[in-house]
Amino acid sequence: MDRVGIVAATFEGLSLAQLQELAREAEAAGVAALFLPEFMNDALANCQAVAQVTSRLTVGSWVANIYLRHPALCAQTAVTVADVSRGRFILGLGVSHRPIVEGVYQEKMERPRDFLRQYITTVRNAVTGKGYPGAPIQPRAATHAVPVYIAALALGTVELAGEIGDGVMLDLCPTSRLPKVRAALERGAAKAGRRASAVEVTAGLLACLGDDLDAARTAARAALARYGQLPFYNKLFDNSGFRQEAAALARGGAQAVSDRMVEELVLLGPPARCRARLAALRAAGVQLPVIRPVRVGEQTYAQAVRQVIEAFA
Image: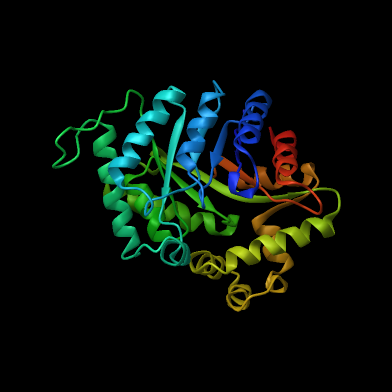
């Protein structure tokens, strides 16, 4: 059976009660995993809230910002969520974006990939019972395994996931880039003396659903333009064959998003059209597509999430 994950973001206007209701609907519909993103909210707290009202659904952070939590705190929160979910929890970790980390949260971002490696090592040691250096009371080890998935836009971070991750979280990655992703995973896995198949490949896709293709494209362009303002995503677009679009997006404006960019990065239009795109992504090596609902026209965000559940579960 093909598995699918869905993202639901409380910072898009969902109340906690709505999030839990959508989680129950997703579980009943057969969705494999619900991922909770983080921006001006707490992804791990949301994961716990979803775990408390479900029994089969995998819950995961998409993506917890490593600059917002001390790794010892992150580890103990992960242990709690893993216990509450009885082993249905994925800890997705990433470096976020410099404008957010330094501009919004006023934290210093230096050598982020090195910091990510160190952070994951510390978290792993804590959750597996190896302890935390210098603590007068050592943290409790997890009763259930806590798989760590690494958010990776750059190939160097994909390689890190191949070396130390249980999974890799790609995002807005066209199928044409996936051979480079696979090669990076294999390089990283070789460093650790393991197979790249040990790392689950997940990939986030924006979804703008509806029969009105013009409205769906308008929503898709606006969403991609927002991502294009962030340097890491802009570089991803540049490295994925959208060089002219990336350069124009750095200067601002949704009009810089080409039709080709929309078609390759977004699930667009009627569900049947989108399911064909998902099939191509799976054939290219993505094991768990993760669909990220986008409001189209006058939709509320809750309606967009529900539409994705109904279309892809």
